[in-house]
Length: 406
Ligand code: NAD
Ligand code: USQ
Image 1 (cartoon, rainbow, N blue to C red):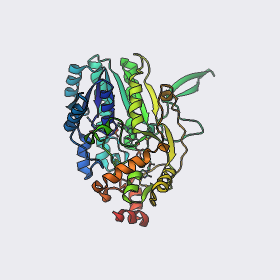
Image 2: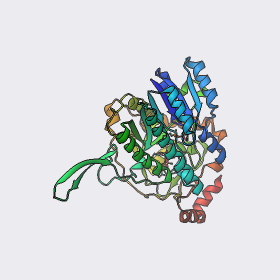
Image 3: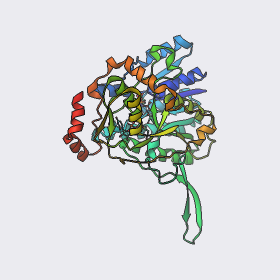
Image 4: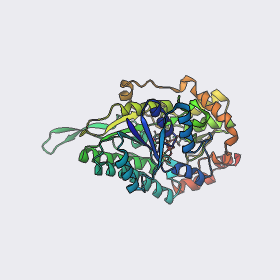
């Protein structure tokens, strides 16, 4: 297949590009490199030394003989360029990673909220709009998030996208319908993924676009089989307070002797998936497109759930790290249970890589190897969800003490 990978320079996009190129597909990365600019804005860098996208693709070619093509296009702002590119290349499938994906970054200020909404909603809409205009019947695979559901299990497992409901009619009958599971976003970023869902629903109904939405949990790990092939194919690894995600952050904190930054009681339960499984799920989704005219196909792309404090305790046990119990910069439930259905991927052959399988120490080893690149002052999460929370955190002696560790 000819596959366009929007956002293919990112943490999940890069190993996906390598995986699909290795599988024999013609891969085109489309990216505006905004994530690299955001590193500059925040004064941080990936833990792992990442080469330019041109250098990465050159190494891939030298290593495998396969070409990955790169195109510098902003999906949100360069509509005409995007449309011309799609018209010329007419990919068979499009994988859409090209969004601002950090919840803390999306909550930093009014400017960051605007940027996240404008970037994410416009990127998604421009893509669908152009596909319709060009009569492009490509299968669109989008990376959504478990956060669209809001993590609360009300005594029932979270289904894969749709909730069967019975609606009582005025004449007393009950009509059954499958509706999108009620959206319950916890950040501006997560809100954009809820908006994406509605845009997809409309375009599948109105224009019969073939769309798969993957509601993914928190991705952990860094290497895949293909990024391991050469030092310069290494994946990016975010550890800072905005882009670093919880499990990867704990692992690197353990490696550099920084107390594990648990927010609140650590009673938050979240869904997780290893990066190798994420890449595999995307391939499985690509191989199982919905038929034209059907509703949006939705998968829950996660393999296990964990409570944040259990993760911290597990990593502390493994490495001897200390745990810091910090005031929570986010507005979120202090404790929640989370049960998620994921039978669709399992039924299609996914074999989950769980935390138990020794890969935790592999990540700690990567972190130790590149520990000299870590700026400890960028570890604390300082983006507060509300002005009140910001004031409270700044007054909290324990939070302040940890920030001063840096
Ligand atoms: P990332 O930030 O590393 O990569 C996103 C890529 O998209 C970057 O290379 C960026 O430059 C590009 N991009 C952003 N806006 C763009 C635009 N307007 N035009 C062109 N390119 C643009 O993020 P990631 O961790 O690889 O996540 C990829 C997708 O998966 C995101 O949509 C995210 O919401 C979703 N997701 C990620 C995780 C996770 O834990 N990393 C979990 C669930 C879902
Ligand atoms: N947390 C800590 N300590 C930290 C960092 C986070 O206790 O140092 C807590 C947070 O308060 C939160 C939980 O861990 O309760 C998860 O935070 P996270 O930063 O790992 O994940 P999140 O902000 O939800 O976002 C990440 C990705 C996002 C993706 C989402 C999937 O950045 O792109 O959509 O995971 S999910 O969480 O399933 O919605």
